[in-house]
Image 1 (cartoon, helix red, strand yellow):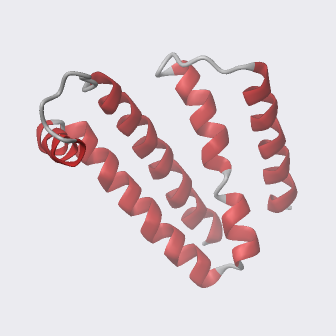
Image 2 (cartoon, rainbow, N blue to C red):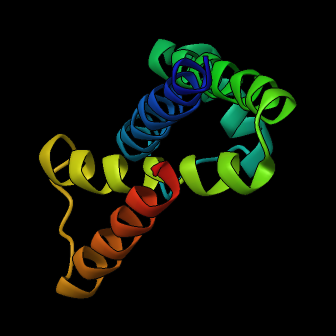
Length: 119
């Protein structure tokens, strides 16, 4: 059960973060007339993928609550860092973001930590 919950923490969080980043970059408008909070609310109403990203984040949050209810926090928090590894990889592939060698090295260190926690 813990691996299913961990999957429900990681995958929706990754999808939510990537969709949120994509939608906010597409909606970027430095000359916007609305103040920040109102502009974001208008974006949420207008962009369905931004709304989907919020739903994904909610699924991840509630799965994390269930995970820490059944597993020690010393497992749940480090294991949920798998989002960093997947997001770095998918941001390069899907969002065409650049990753410096330092970021790649940091991601590999996190991945190594995940392997240690998983054992």
